[in-house]
Image 1 (cartoon, one colour):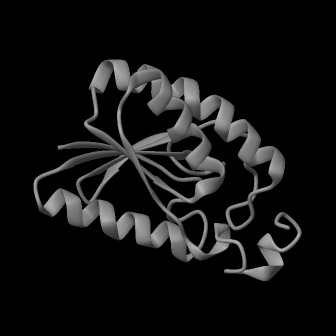
Image 2 (image 1 turned 120 degrees about the horizontal axis):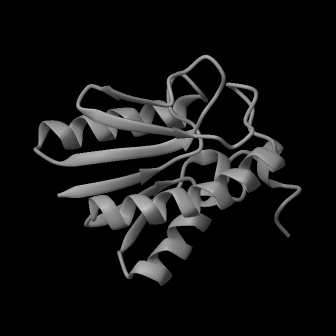
Image 3 (image 1 turned 90 degrees about the vertical axis):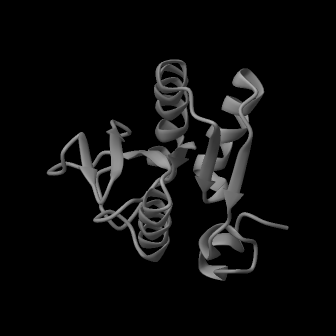
Amino acid sequence: MRILVLVHEFPPVGGGGGRVVEDVCRGMHKKGHESIVVTPHVKGLPRSEERGGVHIDRIRSGRRFPYKATLFDMTVYIIVGFFHCLRLIRLWEPDVIHVHFAVPAGVIAWALSKVTKIPYVITAHLGDVPGGNPTKTDKLTF
């Protein structure tokens, strides 16, 4: 199975959520599945690499800090990520989109699924679940 993975943090960028994504992708590779991770680029990292059987595409999104994604960074990731993934889908033809974090990557997956009819699954991590991390979500929910 071909799996397109969307996440706004992937090691060495981000925290625990990105590490979970990496572990899941490596586990899928061991089971014989192919995956491409589309994640923001941060200065000093290669734009594209293969690690542990997982292909990583790092796209320009304006992200400057490895351990902090601003609203601007996430908005640019949504826009650039949508068009990058649309081209990737046409070339690579994934079977499913696996998205980590409802925001920002969930927005991309929802739009891609509407346009391409490829199903997607979301894994919500603590930082994007209302009440899961009050310092991040309480100001955004009612």
